[in-house]
Length: 323
Image 1 (cartoon, rainbow, N blue to C red):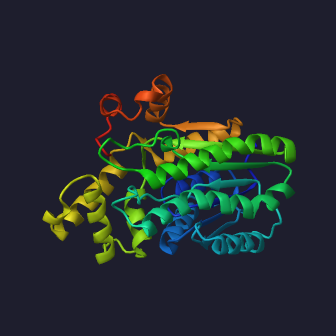
Image 2 (cartoon, one colour; image 1 turned 180 degrees about the vertical axis):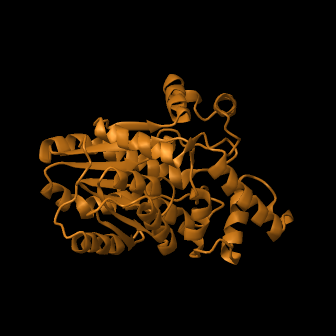
Image 3 (cartoon, rainbow, N blue to C red; image 1 turned 45 degrees about the horizontal axis):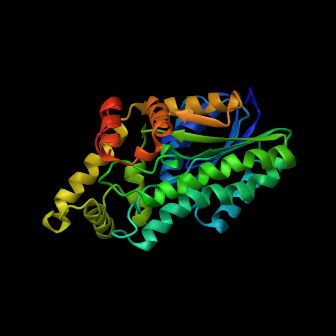
């Protein structure tokens, strides 16, 4: 897998962020790509960018609408890939799709919590199940599962509950590590990697509201404003004293900061991931902040959720409280 040219890659969440950049860089390396997302306009933009950058002759890039939390959608996605890529095998599976939300078991709804968990964990499980027969048909394969630093440290700050996303990312990490022995015994030509990014500049903050609200518009509807208000309340603040306009401004500013003030861009993250795959690394940390928090948690696991632990880390790497 040191040479990706001519291979067939499947990328979930290819409409934006790291997924989009993975698609662009895979195409640039001569890899055929099938990508899915819940947003048709985001998929179209990713494909347009690849075509503007001169899609190499003969390569295929196909787009597919799929909610990875639904097994029926994933199975349809697999069948479309086989038909449109005209193949019975794939070489690379990037389980990248993810959303935030459902941080609190108390302040947030069960529906929001489970949607976040089912996208972030269920998407990895369903796609691995669905595409495994096609990976088995290939001469070489690699499964790349995106976890997070929240897969070994369940926090984004002492005042921000983060249960659904963290639980899902812990599951992704454990699943991928367990796959190492399973694949070695039963499918030695397939490798796997767990990706653990720190703060990457993506639109996940904005996209999460869209997914939870069932609204692909950049304008938040009443349900999304209510979710944002619940998020504010989950941090212990009095959300009833905040107007809808102020909620909208807070959501927009948080999304802007997450995208624009990240220490690592989505493009840089994708390059690190692909380099890790080529080097056959099973554990791929992305960003200096990811490396540093990994070291800190290992050094003092019993203190990992103390307030001063987070504050000293945030000061060291330039994180804002709660990001």
